[in-house]
Image 1 (cartoon, rainbow, N blue to C red):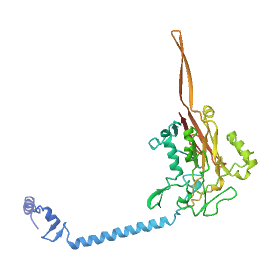
Image 2 (image 1 turned 90 degrees about the vertical axis):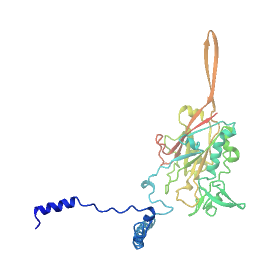
Image 3 (image 1 turned 120 degrees about the vertical axis):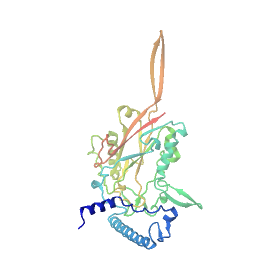
Length: 363
């Protein structure tokens, strides 16, 4: 058994012992390949092979598990039928109403349609926007034309060029709903003056605005098809129109009706006469929407025939016994609210449910 003195000597010797010799600093060449132990980046070829096989196997199994999970997930989805529909979906059961043309993209929050009817360059944006919308620029399909690749986007105008259309197109009517697997045509060529050839009547300061109802899968409208059972809030002009349809064309009563009016009394005075093409609403044979190949939403062209353009204000002043009159002229902003009418479409002006708002200003 060591004595206390021996323990002290051993501790002293360990305390003052020379530290272990540090390895020499290796050059970059030696880091890449060390000829002393035949290693690359600190590992032998055998070590690199083992770790490589491990990670290949590990990530291969991991990728296979992810692929199996994704495959199982996609088996629960249908490419055409949403998993959650109507009340169970985020969209809900109250379709929104949209309008075209839209303002420029740099002013996307605006809803003002403003132009000078006498200047082509001034209203060119609005007619070009309608051309793009009616040509289906958002449903792109590349086809071969005249020996060269050319982008053809004429959707509403040439239905046969729409993806999936041509073979399943059907000329629908109220008494001829589309058979299963076929879709209804939307023929805008006869909607004069709301056609491209007529500049959608913008050059006459009587613009056409196109309305569309947002698509909700499986939604079935409940129609106002009885003139004796209409809501009090419905415009009187629309009530009269429904009554006339009930007498002359009762088969057209299954329609989602549309009304466009000035929001305020002054707007109602300035908006002038309004015409709807081809009829005053969305035909019921387009519903329910079932995401059929080549489906096109129905449209309604709203033609503002005589919106008020200018105002004249008169100010009388008198200075040093000299009386004079000042006249000011300018454009009138008309606030327009369009609504879609069905028993299961509810309106909320604040949240813009079942309606759409925009402004007209024609200098």
